Length: 50
Image 1 (cartoon, rainbow, N blue to C red):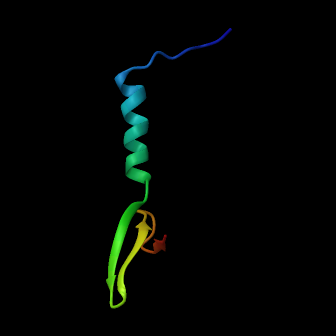
Image 2 (cartoon, one colour; image 1 turned 180 degrees about the vertical axis):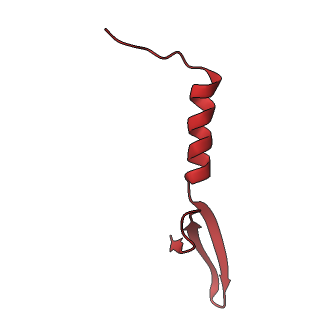
């Protein structure tokens, strides 16, 4: 027997909102040699260089 959850607004919006909040954001730092791009997470102040 299988259980199937019908898609509703909650089963769509809640996971997307959680992913949007947790996902790292693009971060640009202006250096003397030019712009340096990276990703910054809400869990860490360290910028991960791309």
